Length: 104
Image 1 (spheres, rainbow, N blue to C red):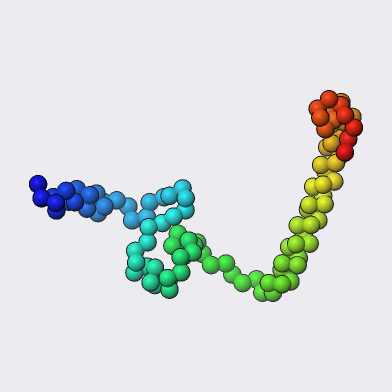
Image 2 (image 1 turned 60 degrees about the vertical axis):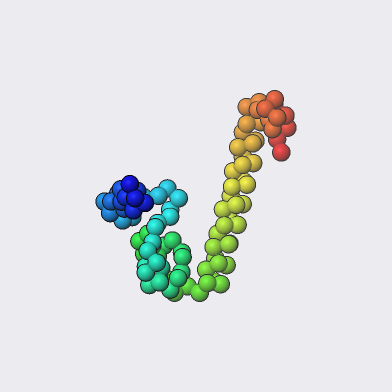
């Protein structure tokens, strides 16, 4: 056999393989021409079919301020609920150490 004969089965297999198989790591094999069409930008959304999100018109700074305030409120609520759960566990005889210690 010649070296070109060794490559032939691999080439035949590639021709019959689906162009974009599913990869758990969210990677996609892209041809160099496709990368050039996207201006050499390598963000995955351009290659796996993710659609661009519509601009909601809210300025970035205002949106971040709103989202951070929402996050802080959710964190405070989470802390309140954690304390209520700890208190309930204490009343049932299960303190922080699992032996009925004092609540935090």
